[in-house]
Length: 226
Image 1: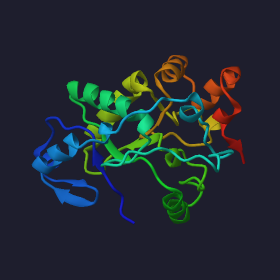
Image 2: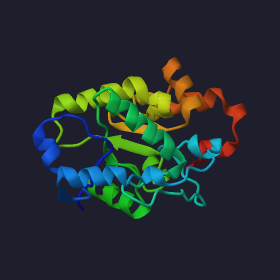
Image 3: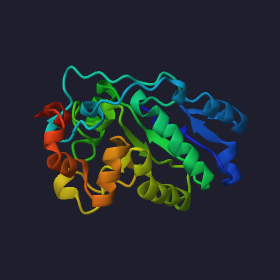
C-alpha cells in the first residue's frame, strides 16, 4: 500500500521539489500543483464544533465510540471538516513566513488502520478503533522528499504556532508516561483554538487538559475505556 503525500502550501524552495512532487501517488508538475492547491478541501462548509467531538480522547485505553462517524472533506486531503477553516488559516500564516506545510497522513478508515497495525505491529501503530487518525482530527506533517532542514523548519514552526489555529503537538518529548507514545514531531491533533491555547501555555497534553477540566465536558469527551 503506497503512502500518499499532499502539499498544503508552496513557497520558494529548491526547484527539484517544486518541479516534481508526488500528489496522491502520481507525479505532477508545479502548474498542476497550483491547481490542486486552489482546489482545496477547505471549500467544504465548516460545521459547528461540538466540544465532545474535537476534545475526544483517543489512546490505547480510550476507544473511539462505535457510533462515531466523522464528517469528512471530499476533495484532495481527507480530514474532518470541523477543522477546515483553521487548517486553511494556518496554511496561509505559514506561507507568509516562508514555510509550506505538507501532509503525510490525515484521516484513515478502520480498514487502513488495520492494515497499518498488521504491517507495523503494536509498537508503531495503534489498534483499529484506538487511533486519532480515524477521527479525522489528526494530521502527520512530513514528506520524505523534503530536506531534513526544511522538515525541521516546518516542525519548529508548527510547534511554536499551531496552537493559534487549534492544533497541539500530540506526543511531545517528556510526556511519554502520560500519552503512552514516544515523541512524534510530526503528529498534530486538532482540539480547537481555546483548548489548544491553554494546553500550549501550560505545557500539557490532551490527557492532562481533560483531567483538569472534566467538569466542563460531557463524559463522551473522554471516549470509551477499552
